[in-house]
Image (cartoon, rainbow, N blue to C red; front, top):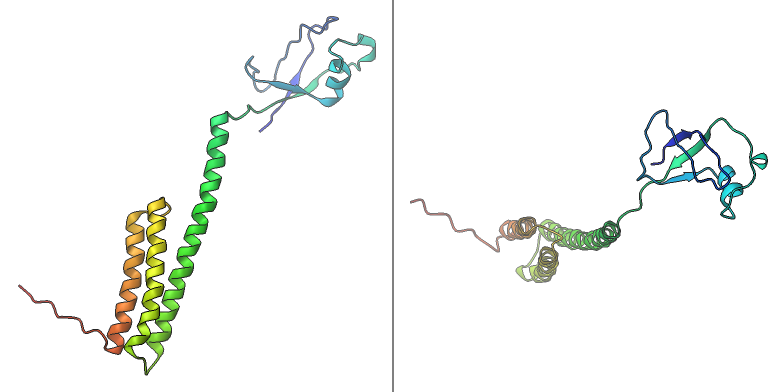
Length: 178
C-alpha cells in the first residue's frame, strides 16, 4: 500500500545533493525507498544532473510516494509453490467428490430397484474400489488428513452395507452381550 506524503525542499544545490524530506503524518526513515512524482522527476533527474532552478516550476510541496518493499525471493518462491499446491489439491479433491458421487448415485439407483439381484452390486464395488484408491492417493499426497480419508471410505462402506441389508443380501449378526 502506498502512502502519500508531502515533501518540502530545504536546499537546492546545483547537484541536487541535499534534499530534506519532512512528513506531516508519518516520519520517513532512511530505509524506506521513495519514488517522486513523474512531473518532477523526469525533467530533473532524466540526465543525471540538475537543471537550472529557473526551468523548474516552484511549488510549495511535492507529493512523494513511499514504494512498498520488494518481496524477498524466498517469499516469492513460497507463494508460487503454495499456488501450485492449491491447484493440485483442488483437482484431487474434485476427483474424490466426483467418484464418491458416482458411487452414491449408483447405490441409490440399486436401492430403489425392486427386483435387484446380488450380482448387480459388483460394478458398484468396482466404483467403490476406484474411489478408495483416489482417497488413499490424496491422503498419501497430503491433500486429505488420514482421518478424513478413513471417514469418507467408511461412509461409502456404510451406504453399500445399507443397500445389501435392504435387499436381504447381507444379514447382520446380532452382537452377543457379555
